Image (cartoon, rainbow, N blue to C red):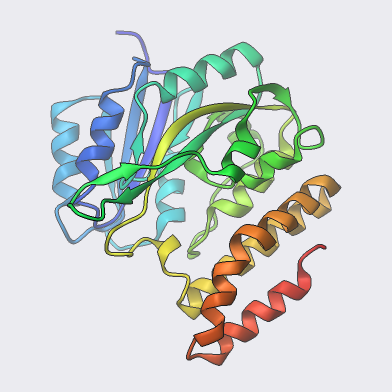
Length: 298
Protein backbone atom coordinates (compact mmCIF):
# COMPACT_ATOMS: atom_id res chain seq x y z
CA UNK A 1 0.00 0.00 0.00
CA UNK A 2 1.34 3.43 -0.94
CA UNK A 3 2.11 5.55 2.12
CA UNK A 4 0.01 8.68 2.67
CA UNK A 5 1.32 12.04 1.50
CA UNK A 6 -1.05 14.33 3.41
CA UNK A 7 -2.23 14.38 7.02
CA UNK A 8 -5.48 16.25 7.62
CA UNK A 9 -5.93 17.37 11.24
CA UNK A 10 -9.62 17.38 12.20
CA UNK A 11 -10.36 18.91 15.63
CA UNK A 12 -13.86 18.85 17.05
CA UNK A 13 -15.86 19.24 20.25
CA UNK A 14 -19.57 18.49 20.51
CA UNK A 15 -20.11 18.50 16.75
CA UNK A 16 -22.16 15.33 16.37
CA UNK A 17 -24.63 17.16 14.09
CA UNK A 18 -21.92 17.90 11.52
CA UNK A 19 -19.05 15.44 12.00
CA UNK A 20 -20.43 12.80 9.63
CA UNK A 21 -20.44 15.34 6.79
CA UNK A 22 -16.88 16.45 7.52
CA UNK A 23 -15.58 12.88 7.51
CA UNK A 24 -17.53 11.95 4.39
CA UNK A 25 -15.99 14.94 2.64
CA UNK A 26 -12.56 13.46 3.39
CA UNK A 27 -13.58 10.01 2.21
CA UNK A 28 -14.73 11.61 -1.07
CA UNK A 29 -11.32 13.17 -1.80
CA UNK A 30 -9.99 12.46 -5.29
CA UNK A 31 -6.45 12.54 -3.89
CA UNK A 32 -5.94 8.94 -2.72
CA UNK A 33 -2.95 9.37 -0.40
CA UNK A 34 -4.27 11.03 2.73
CA UNK A 35 -4.66 10.16 6.38
CA UNK A 36 -6.53 12.06 9.08
CA UNK A 37 -6.02 12.65 12.80
CA UNK A 38 -9.38 13.17 14.48
CA UNK A 39 -8.88 15.10 17.72
CA UNK A 40 -11.87 14.91 20.06
CA UNK A 41 -11.56 17.78 22.52
CA UNK A 42 -13.45 16.04 25.35
CA UNK A 43 -16.85 15.99 23.66
CA UNK A 44 -19.88 15.17 25.79
CA UNK A 45 -22.21 14.42 22.87
CA UNK A 46 -21.91 11.74 20.17
CA UNK A 47 -18.77 13.15 18.55
CA UNK A 48 -16.55 10.63 20.31
CA UNK A 49 -18.54 7.72 18.91
CA UNK A 50 -18.63 9.16 15.40
CA UNK A 51 -14.85 9.53 15.39
CA UNK A 52 -14.36 6.04 16.84
CA UNK A 53 -16.69 4.45 14.29
CA UNK A 54 -14.91 6.19 11.44
CA UNK A 55 -11.53 4.90 12.61
CA UNK A 56 -12.88 1.37 13.04
CA UNK A 57 -14.26 1.37 9.50
CA UNK A 58 -11.39 3.13 7.70
CA UNK A 59 -7.70 2.77 8.70
CA UNK A 60 -6.97 6.20 7.24
CA UNK A 61 -8.62 7.74 10.32
CA UNK A 62 -6.83 7.88 13.67
CA UNK A 63 -8.53 9.18 16.83
CA UNK A 64 -6.98 11.06 19.74
CA UNK A 65 -9.08 12.25 22.68
CA UNK A 66 -8.41 14.98 25.19
CA UNK A 67 -9.69 13.92 28.65
CA UNK A 68 -10.55 17.56 29.40
CA UNK A 69 -11.52 20.32 26.96
CA UNK A 70 -8.46 22.34 25.95
CA UNK A 71 -9.73 24.39 23.01
CA UNK A 72 -9.26 24.43 19.27
CA UNK A 73 -5.65 25.61 19.31
CA UNK A 74 -4.58 22.80 21.63
CA UNK A 75 -6.52 20.23 19.58
CA UNK A 76 -4.74 21.32 16.42
CA UNK A 77 -1.39 21.17 18.21
CA UNK A 78 -2.14 17.62 19.35
CA UNK A 79 -2.72 16.69 15.73
CA UNK A 80 0.45 18.48 14.61
CA UNK A 81 2.56 16.38 16.96
CA UNK A 82 1.38 13.23 15.15
CA UNK A 83 2.04 14.28 11.55
CA UNK A 84 4.46 11.98 9.72
CA UNK A 85 3.64 12.89 6.12
CA UNK A 86 5.31 15.43 3.80
CA UNK A 87 2.21 17.65 3.73
CA UNK A 88 -0.41 18.71 6.27
CA UNK A 89 -3.81 20.39 6.21
CA UNK A 90 -6.65 21.21 8.58
CA UNK A 91 -10.41 20.71 8.48
CA UNK A 92 -12.70 21.71 11.34
CA UNK A 93 -15.17 18.94 12.14
CA UNK A 94 -18.21 21.13 11.42
CA UNK A 95 -17.03 22.13 7.92
CA UNK A 96 -16.80 20.31 4.58
CA UNK A 97 -13.91 19.88 2.17
CA UNK A 98 -14.60 19.96 -1.56
CA UNK A 99 -13.84 16.59 -3.25
CA UNK A 100 -10.90 17.80 -5.32
CA UNK A 101 -9.41 20.06 -2.64
CA UNK A 102 -6.41 17.96 -1.64
CA UNK A 103 -5.66 16.93 -5.21
CA UNK A 104 -5.73 20.52 -6.46
CA UNK A 105 -3.64 21.96 -3.64
CA UNK A 106 -1.10 19.13 -3.65
CA UNK A 107 -0.59 19.38 -7.41
CA UNK A 108 0.11 23.10 -7.11
CA UNK A 109 2.55 22.70 -4.24
CA UNK A 110 4.40 19.77 -5.78
CA UNK A 111 4.84 21.74 -8.99
CA UNK A 112 5.98 25.00 -7.41
CA UNK A 113 8.15 23.84 -4.53
CA UNK A 114 6.63 26.56 -2.31
CA UNK A 115 6.17 26.29 1.45
CA UNK A 116 2.38 26.26 1.34
CA UNK A 117 -0.62 26.97 -0.88
CA UNK A 118 -3.74 28.97 -0.02
CA UNK A 119 -7.13 28.13 -1.53
CA UNK A 120 -10.47 29.90 -1.60
CA UNK A 121 -13.47 29.09 0.59
CA UNK A 122 -17.18 29.83 0.90
CA UNK A 123 -19.65 30.07 3.76
CA UNK A 124 -22.09 27.23 4.35
CA UNK A 125 -25.22 29.03 5.52
CA UNK A 126 -28.40 27.52 7.06
CA UNK A 127 -31.39 27.33 4.77
CA UNK A 128 -34.18 29.72 5.71
CA UNK A 129 -36.96 27.17 5.19
CA UNK A 130 -35.38 23.86 6.10
CA UNK A 131 -32.84 21.98 8.17
CA UNK A 132 -30.11 21.98 5.53
CA UNK A 133 -27.20 24.25 4.65
CA UNK A 134 -26.30 25.80 1.30
CA UNK A 135 -22.87 26.95 0.15
CA UNK A 136 -22.63 30.60 -0.86
CA UNK A 137 -20.34 32.33 -3.32
CA UNK A 138 -16.72 33.36 -2.90
CA UNK A 139 -16.62 36.68 -1.08
CA UNK A 140 -14.58 39.63 -2.44
CA UNK A 141 -11.87 39.53 0.25
CA UNK A 142 -11.35 35.81 -0.42
CA UNK A 143 -11.09 36.48 -4.15
CA UNK A 144 -8.55 39.24 -3.52
CA UNK A 145 -6.36 36.80 -1.61
CA UNK A 146 -6.56 33.84 -3.98
CA UNK A 147 -7.49 34.95 -7.51
CA UNK A 148 -5.78 34.79 -9.94
CA UNK A 149 -3.60 31.77 -9.30
CA UNK A 150 -0.02 32.58 -8.37
CA UNK A 151 2.98 30.31 -7.99
CA UNK A 152 5.98 30.97 -5.74
CA UNK A 153 4.83 34.44 -4.71
CA UNK A 154 5.67 36.43 -1.58
CA UNK A 155 3.89 38.83 0.73
CA UNK A 156 5.75 41.74 -0.86
CA UNK A 157 4.45 40.71 -4.28
CA UNK A 158 0.95 39.77 -3.11
CA UNK A 159 0.05 41.60 0.13
CA UNK A 160 -3.67 40.83 -0.25
CA UNK A 161 -2.91 37.20 0.65
CA UNK A 162 -2.64 38.37 4.28
CA UNK A 163 -6.43 38.63 4.31
CA UNK A 164 -6.71 34.83 4.28
CA UNK A 165 -6.12 34.07 7.95
CA UNK A 166 -7.89 30.72 8.38
CA UNK A 167 -6.02 27.46 9.00
CA UNK A 168 -8.26 25.21 6.94
CA UNK A 169 -7.86 26.73 3.47
CA UNK A 170 -4.16 25.83 3.20
CA UNK A 171 -1.95 22.85 2.41
CA UNK A 172 1.57 23.12 3.80
CA UNK A 173 4.87 21.32 3.73
CA UNK A 174 5.32 19.69 7.11
CA UNK A 175 9.01 20.61 7.00
CA UNK A 176 8.03 24.30 6.92
CA UNK A 177 6.04 23.96 10.15
CA UNK A 178 8.84 21.99 11.79
CA UNK A 179 11.59 24.39 10.73
CA UNK A 180 9.79 27.37 12.27
CA UNK A 181 8.20 25.52 15.21
CA UNK A 182 4.77 26.74 14.18
CA UNK A 183 2.11 26.05 16.79
CA UNK A 184 -1.30 27.49 17.56
CA UNK A 185 -1.84 29.70 20.61
CA UNK A 186 -3.74 27.80 23.29
CA UNK A 187 -6.48 29.14 25.50
CA UNK A 188 -7.56 31.60 22.81
CA UNK A 189 -10.74 31.90 20.77
CA UNK A 190 -9.06 33.21 17.61
CA UNK A 191 -5.96 31.11 17.19
CA UNK A 192 -5.66 31.25 13.37
CA UNK A 193 -4.72 34.90 12.88
CA UNK A 194 -1.22 35.01 14.34
CA UNK A 195 -0.22 31.64 12.85
CA UNK A 196 -1.35 32.74 9.39
CA UNK A 197 0.64 35.97 9.49
CA UNK A 198 3.70 34.10 10.77
CA UNK A 199 3.36 31.74 7.82
CA UNK A 200 3.22 34.58 5.30
CA UNK A 201 6.18 36.42 6.79
CA UNK A 202 8.36 33.30 7.22
CA UNK A 203 7.71 31.68 3.84
CA UNK A 204 10.37 31.70 1.17
CA UNK A 205 7.44 31.49 -1.25
CA UNK A 206 3.79 30.44 -1.21
CA UNK A 207 1.11 29.75 -3.83
CA UNK A 208 -2.49 30.85 -4.13
CA UNK A 209 -5.28 29.04 -5.96
CA UNK A 210 -8.76 30.40 -6.77
CA UNK A 211 -10.38 26.99 -6.36
CA UNK A 212 -12.88 26.66 -3.50
CA UNK A 213 -11.44 24.02 -1.17
CA UNK A 214 -13.58 24.30 1.98
CA UNK A 215 -17.17 25.14 2.88
CA UNK A 216 -17.09 26.93 6.22
CA UNK A 217 -20.23 26.39 8.27
CA UNK A 218 -22.24 29.20 9.83
CA UNK A 219 -24.19 27.27 12.43
CA UNK A 220 -27.93 27.70 12.70
CA UNK A 221 -27.75 27.92 16.51
CA UNK A 222 -25.02 30.58 16.27
CA UNK A 223 -22.77 28.59 18.60
CA UNK A 224 -19.57 28.79 16.54
CA UNK A 225 -17.00 31.25 17.84
CA UNK A 226 -17.23 33.54 14.80
CA UNK A 227 -20.92 34.04 15.63
CA UNK A 228 -20.30 35.10 19.27
CA UNK A 229 -18.67 38.47 18.76
CA UNK A 230 -21.33 40.16 20.88
CA UNK A 231 -19.65 38.64 23.96
CA UNK A 232 -17.08 40.97 25.54
CA UNK A 233 -14.42 38.31 26.19
CA UNK A 234 -14.76 36.95 22.65
CA UNK A 235 -14.50 40.47 21.22
CA UNK A 236 -11.36 41.21 23.24
CA UNK A 237 -9.71 38.00 22.05
CA UNK A 238 -10.66 38.78 18.47
CA UNK A 239 -9.29 42.31 18.59
CA UNK A 240 -6.11 41.10 20.27
CA UNK A 241 -5.59 38.52 17.53
CA UNK A 242 -6.13 41.13 14.82
CA UNK A 243 -3.67 43.47 16.51
CA UNK A 244 -1.04 40.76 16.98
CA UNK A 245 -1.33 39.82 13.31
CA UNK A 246 -0.74 43.40 12.22
CA UNK A 247 2.20 43.70 14.64
CA UNK A 248 3.81 40.62 13.08
CA UNK A 249 3.44 42.05 9.59
CA UNK A 250 4.85 45.39 10.72
CA UNK A 251 7.83 43.74 12.45
CA UNK A 252 8.60 41.85 9.24
CA UNK A 253 8.64 45.09 7.25
CA UNK A 254 5.58 44.03 5.25
CA UNK A 255 4.24 47.58 4.95
CA UNK A 256 1.95 46.87 2.01
CA UNK A 257 0.37 43.95 3.89
CA UNK A 258 -0.06 46.13 7.01
CA UNK A 259 -1.95 48.68 4.92
CA UNK A 260 -3.98 45.91 3.29
CA UNK A 261 -4.97 44.42 6.64
CA UNK A 262 -5.90 47.83 8.03
CA UNK A 263 -8.11 48.54 5.03
CA UNK A 264 -9.77 45.13 5.15
CA UNK A 265 -10.44 45.30 8.90
CA UNK A 266 -11.96 48.78 8.56
CA UNK A 267 -14.26 47.75 5.71
CA UNK A 268 -15.11 44.18 6.72
CA UNK A 269 -14.63 43.56 10.44
CA UNK A 270 -15.42 46.91 12.05
CA UNK A 271 -18.86 47.90 10.65
CA UNK A 272 -20.86 45.06 12.28
CA UNK A 273 -18.93 45.46 15.53
CA UNK A 274 -19.58 49.19 15.63
CA UNK A 275 -23.28 48.54 15.09
CA UNK A 276 -23.25 46.09 17.99
CA UNK A 277 -21.45 48.62 20.18
CA UNK A 278 -24.14 51.25 19.62
CA UNK A 279 -26.69 49.28 21.67
CA UNK A 280 -24.47 46.91 23.65
CA UNK A 281 -25.46 46.91 27.37
CA UNK A 282 -21.89 46.44 28.59
CA UNK A 283 -19.75 49.65 28.36
CA UNK A 284 -16.44 47.70 28.20
CA UNK A 285 -17.54 46.41 24.80
CA UNK A 286 -17.56 49.90 23.29
CA UNK A 287 -14.40 50.90 25.16
CA UNK A 288 -12.43 47.89 23.89
CA UNK A 289 -13.58 48.51 20.33
CA UNK A 290 -12.76 52.22 20.38
CA UNK A 291 -9.30 51.54 21.82
CA UNK A 292 -8.61 49.04 19.04
CA UNK A 293 -9.74 51.42 16.28
CA UNK A 294 -7.17 53.97 17.47
CA UNK A 295 -4.36 51.45 16.84
CA UNK A 296 -5.36 50.59 13.28
CA UNK A 297 -3.15 51.78 10.41
CA UNK A 298 -4.80 54.42 8.24
